[in-house]
Length: 84
Image (cartoon, rainbow, N blue to C red):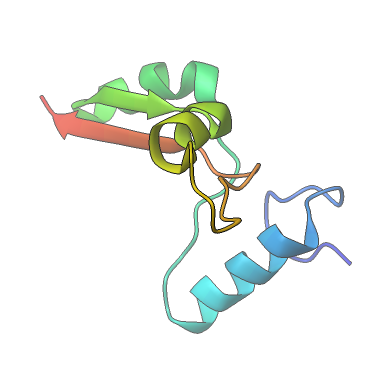
């Protein structure tokens, strides 16, 4: 059942569990943004994207060559922004 705001019912069980754990810890997990329009959306907040990594980019940058079975989550997009 999809009861978390802005999460589609096709979201993975993993993502649903991550959201639940974050909320349980008192952290609001913001989910549902469109990576291609994020820069435009944060500009009015005086923020500028410094780094914008897709799941494939995260895998290449942080997980390539690992032998322990860890890999980038398909639902995670990493953005680093700076204050303008």
